[in-house]
Amino acid sequence: MDHLPRSRWRGPIGTWQAVVLVVAVLVAANLLLNRWTGPPRLIAAVTVSALLLGVLRWAGGTLADAGLAPGTLARGARWASVLMGLVGVVYAAGALLPATRSLFEDQRYDGMTGSELVARVLVVVPVGTVLVEEIAFRGVLYGLVSRARGTVWATTVSSLLFGLWHVLPSLHLATAKPALTGVFGDSALGSFLAITAAVLFTALAGVLFCELRRRSGSLLAPMGLHWAVNAFGYVVGYLLW
Image 1 (cartoon, rainbow, N blue to C red):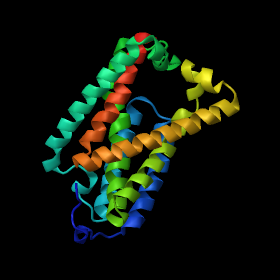
Image 2 (image 1 turned 90 degrees about the vertical axis):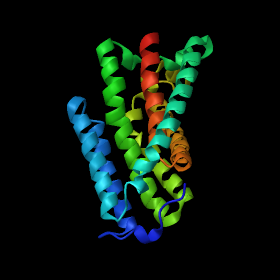
Image 3 (image 1 turned 120 degrees about the vertical axis):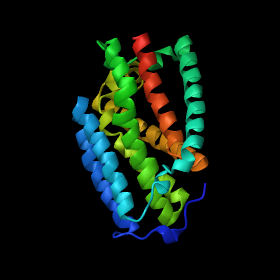
């Protein structure tokens, strides 16, 4: 969907100044969110999300520029519902097929209780991951860069930064997932290759999320897909571990 006219952009700071400020906030947030757990992480995620929306507003943007215009929410919710259903079907098939079942195995599920799983799926993932990442990358960053350079630039910048955002969470990925250990090994080189693969994969996922944001006109569409991929992954991994 097309954006609002450029004339709406009148704020105390310029668009690119706002982009630099957003990136600086995200660097600090990435360090904190990967260090903190429990309530501090959730509080930080909500705070960062509000701060980023404040930067967008400071630059003259609106909720519509972040994909959160009230008039687009119903359409976005419909997109999200369909996407969540599709992910559920794909994950169920993957879990049932012997050839793909091992992809869901993850040592991080060892010792996880049912209540911890529920908290992760219903609180940690939607608030500590989806909310902050979607507002940051497909909301504020996408809106800012799109206004200045168009959707191609917005998608490129947002997706590259989204990939780099996942460097810290991927540090122990090669050893945590048995399927990846068999591919990359447990050496330093294997760890580097696993991190690189994770960054590239999440950058490509970012492109898909941006396209969903563009086509639906709402941030709810990528939010729904993002939640389903993470949350259903936890559920299947927990059940198979």
